[in-house]
Image (cartoon, rainbow, N blue to C red; front, side, top):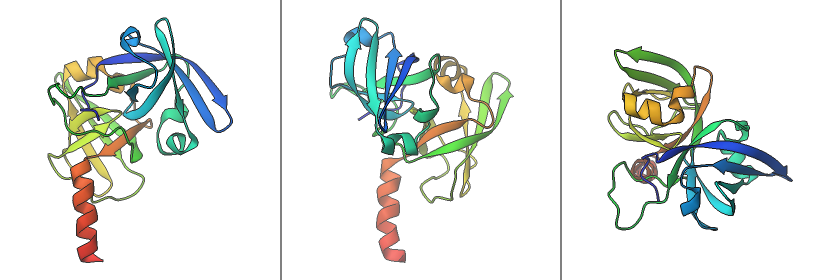
Length: 196
């Protein structure tokens, strides 16, 4: 489980296809603290560390993951948001994040507003899993929803988050990974049984 509070930006150093799988090698500031079989969220996608070499480690994404996330677009030199799993005795600073991406969204606008940034995203299809001032995870970042509609939403980004995550590189037309709030997903599923 994760919280959506990004620890550091990693850099993709190598991408290798093997069948329908893709191995990503990442250089990060916390590689020396990792161990084989540990879970790390990459742009919000939970992946398992399969090898470690000095300051780089490798994770593998299967076809299912590649089809539902923006990981297939990664290339050497790209920056990824990284978060290690939450320790059981740690503070819960963001919201409950599973690292299971639900869909991708396309950035449709970025506006600077006197020191902060306002991002608007569009989903590929309508959803009932977002509420005004609720939580959402964008590329692994725990954020608060504003201006919610069936297919669009916005988030306001403070300077610290902008400078310390890969949102600083997101432009209109780019895709981001989206994980809806897990509590909202369960509520929507329960209510569907009453309305079906």
